[in-house]
Image 1: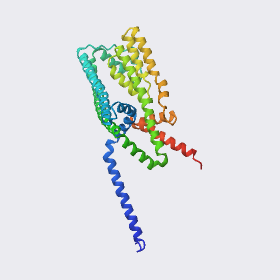
Image 2: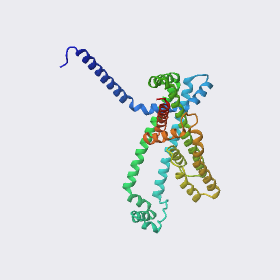
Image 3: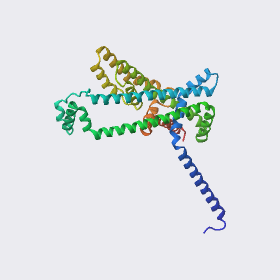
Image 4: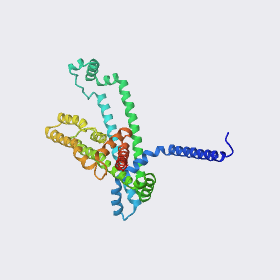
Length: 352
């Protein structure tokens, strides 16, 4: 039992606890409500920072009309997103239909397996048997591999659904980016105010550091990956490689996740040598080699430019963030590690 003197203090403590509990419930509930929109809003902020210099130039050309400039950029970004997606989808559907037609007509000929295949450990005999069946009757081999083909088909359908959802989220992010650019001054003011409340006098510096880091990652990773994909796509189209758009998209993804693109383009070079003349294959091979090695030159030039932290910190943060959160982690991880590195460095330099 509490004494009469302790009752006011106990009542104040109880009321404080109830207020904190109520505030925690409201915060958790609000977070659950906005949770589905976190990725689109983060992507929207990243896009807004990345295209902000273009927006400023376009707004100047349009006489300072912010709404028209942001709407123009949104429309252009939606076209860049939907048109290639539609073309790739149509190309894949056409390729699948053509493959099915050729299988039914018996137009696809599989060469018989080499005899040493049967001597491979564990899988040699089964692989040799299946390969032999495919060389004699491809349709029968596909029916024999029905469960595996069905599993692959289910995976492709799930991947297509995931890709469609990703495109929808990215489209929403484009609208968010347009709104952030339109209300840029207000958004910037709120961002600086929040940073000053959290980090006091270091708030402005950390906001600018975050902006510079996002721009560096956009140039040094996504920019380099886009350059490699475009150059690869041009070469694939010029060499007449089937499904050039799909291969270029895979080059883009591999470059983003920092996998050497030569692992994909190397076998394509062998295909071009087997199906084209040396006048086509040799320049194609030289071009592919130059594209595969170009990131070693472009990345050091673009990744650390403008940032106040070492390029290695940004690179490690981007790759670690990607492994943790996917593509969006490229930016979030780089920004988090850059801010943490800056605060840690200042703590070390602070006199005891």
